[in-house]
Length: 160
Image 1 (tube, rainbow, N blue to C red):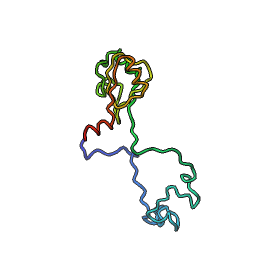
Image 2 (cartoon, rainbow, N blue to C red; image 1 turned 120 degrees about the horizontal axis):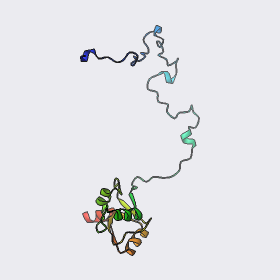
Image 3 (spheres, rainbow, N blue to C red; image 1 turned 45 degrees about the vertical axis):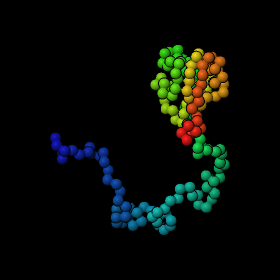
Image 4 (cartoon, one colour; image 1 turned 30 degrees about the horizontal axis):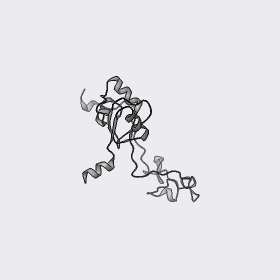
């Protein structure tokens, strides 16, 4: 068998319908577009147009607001953190975004990692994250650990 012997299976391909190629073709003359009017012309874009009636996207109420500069953080709960320490995936002495990603607690850091207070706090943990809730900071400090925040405002002030 050679390359010039190859062909698709019979019936697997079908030629496209060529419109506007004579009245006898079945799609000649007006090429399936009907008679006159806007849609028979080229360059018609009628998406959302409802014939002069108020379109549905204008009739429905608009709700909410999404800020352009909003940030999305990867979230880590204290319970998952202490479970990872107990399982030996992380050492409690030095927890930072790299160790959290290596342990599988965070898949991708997005705009930073935020610590939340759900679950029991690990003992004597030194944690460096972008943000943390007040309850999470209090729980870790009560368990003898420390939390260092590296928020964007601290990075900008250090660079200037």
